[in-house]
Length: 117
Image (cartoon, rainbow, N blue to C red; front, top):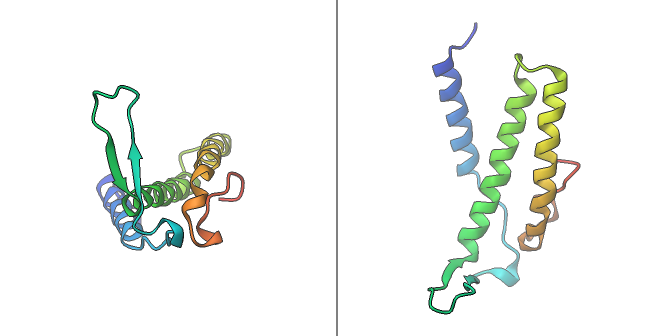
């Protein structure tokens, strides 16, 4: 049975929503109730504060959405193996860039890895 475009989009949305609802990466205890403060170079501009919990949620959502994208690419029948490898390379480099946020995670298995995700 083949799915039409609407069914595929619906399924992708449901999968993404399920991943979002499973947000379960723990913030390292030293950052609990912490706040990130963005201070502009220009003192006449207002600074911006963001809770560490909210920031962590955003980082984990990026990770989870990248995993869904990776699955979509790998299961896409219309992409050639070369195209899949090329796109996977971009995802791997993104994971590598996101390793900058590993200090926030309490559990080692939640951390980013540029070459093993």
